[in-house]
Length: 391
Image 1: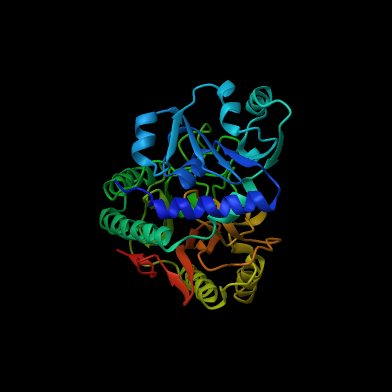
Image 2: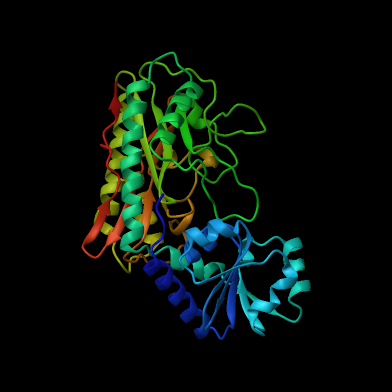
């Protein structure tokens, strides 16, 4: 089991405290599991109080022994009731909390426990801070990329005509877990949000769009879970897209590859080549100072010039308008390569770029790589060959 180095935690807390002081805030009270882990090194339940100046305190509801073993923080104490919180806030009056993921009913309990407190949202800052990864974090993603490639080799060896999406998914998920997948993924969402962590989309299942703002939906198994692999049978000369996650130390790597048993239709092969052209554009254009929106716009130009605008990232009313997204401890991190996203790319961004093309009556083709923006340029962290895997 790997632990977050103390130097990482100290650096992150130092930047947060600088932000709090600059905003005239007395401190931040964090409760979301992602930020608890990011700023303390443990995901045990409770709160992290970060004063603008002074020593942070990890206030653990459960489990105290694990928190003390996992976190390098000096002050880790049991706090099992909201009523105890004022004892640790040192008379703070202006604080920040993660209001973007805090339910209204729970916020009411904080108001009762902390009367007269002025609260502002720290969510935008922490998301932006986490979008810039340290060398240590990028190394975790490299480990996840290795696991993703090892998983794909097993999937490629297992695919057979006549098996269903669900059967291939079951084999793939077992391989995914054998290679260290943590068994869960996190989205930055206040409401419940579910999706499979291993997509298998065969043939026309790709045109079964669903509720998520993602290119792939999938037929799923029932209306209660209208998403992901279903019972469609994999046939010869049929595009089969696998879109899945791997993890290392809590950090995500996102990847899509297209497989087929036998050669694919020429139209699909051409579209796959355009998807690779879009990835090449990203590698050439992504650099510090470039806006996320501009990368999206350049990808649309490539699709238009290829005569594939209507097929790009969906079909008809179900096309999504983004090319890629940050990945880290959560799947939907910043930056997002999409319209109206004016965030400038920066050294340390880790971005999953996923061009895909959809064809009624045939299915979809596409691929996705995870990249890191480094001082020397763009590094593709994904290790798996980009070519269509024809078996």
